[in-house]
Image: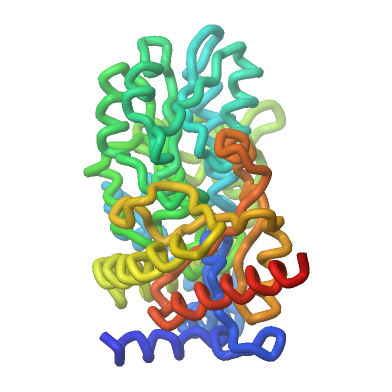
Amino acid sequence: MANKFETIVKDFPILSRRVNSEPLLYLDNAATSQTPNQVLDRISDFYRTSNANVHRGVYTLANEATETYEQVREKVASFIHAPNAKSIVYTRSTTESLNLIASSFGDLVVNQDDEILITIMEHHSNLIPWQQLAKRTHAKLRYVMLTDDQTLDLQDFRKKLNEHTKIVSVAQTSNVLGVTNPIKTIAKLAHEKHAYVVVDAAQSVAHQKIDVQDLNVDFLAFSGHKMLGPTGIGVLFGKSELLKVMPPIQFGGEMIENVTQTQAKWQQAPWKLEAGTPNIGGVIGLGAAIDYLKAIGMPWIEATERELIERLLPELEQVAGLTVYGPQKVAQHNGIVAFNLKNLHPHDVATGLDMLGVEVRAGHHCAQPLMTTLGVEATVRASLSFYNSLADMDRFVYAVKMVKEFFDRES
């Protein structure tokens, strides 16, 4: 395993740089992951050798670009165990995917006095689109709250799920609390009430196996840049029968079958939902990222990241004056750890860690309703990946202690 890890680290050139004269320790993977050479090279190779627009040409370069572009759709479907490639829509991001569902499908199925059920732990990307849908349709947006150990309260979910619920939308993994929600159970309960299930998989897709058919979700969204790929490319999985009835919300080239002066006919899904020249290089990079993750193996990734959190969480909780948010049981906590140091602003802590070469995020993490529920304005967040090591965990805890000691002396 050690040799495999050493080989992997060498694939990520940025990990060898220094920050503030210290070796880089990157722990902001929940915001964006780093990108291996294999992905960088594949994107570069496309632009150097095969760059052309897709779907609209009959010449060699255009055919090559189109074939590669559509092959990635097949890879994405296989990666999340979707039934077919036509259930995969390319978008710019998780955010755009969720907005597309809310604006296209949501307007079809949600009416006045209906209910939309989400959780208090949602990222703004999985909150505001539903908030706006509720306002447009005069529906009610309801929130599932947390248990005392800051996990999803399934009892509250059962209580609030009812015959008026039309859509249930939930993050598979919280970007703050470090908890993975029981999506299969949620989907089963929601479908019993004839509600549709949307899953934000931005924080889970690079860290665990996802099988949309086993989970039986109706929609699932994620981003390439959180799974070793480039920015600007996202994915929306939707059940084919649902994508079929969704009207496009953007119009122009690519998505049409026929246009006259007075009307237009759309292509079938997924292409009718992909107006304009797409991010072809981003799609190709996403495909290379999937190849890389599959070559390493999701079981190995899950096991490696489990070792990291089992090392980090107990040590971090021993730091005096430090509060960890989310479940305290390490078995329930994944590789996202949000915390605060008593009497210190999260931005000060993050700045101090940066001076030691440790890169974490501080702020409300686009989850302000959750921050309000936790009784804080912001937290420090460390988020792990398989290219981090046990030594990195020890170094991080030591750096937190150093920052704490510095501010204690200054106060």
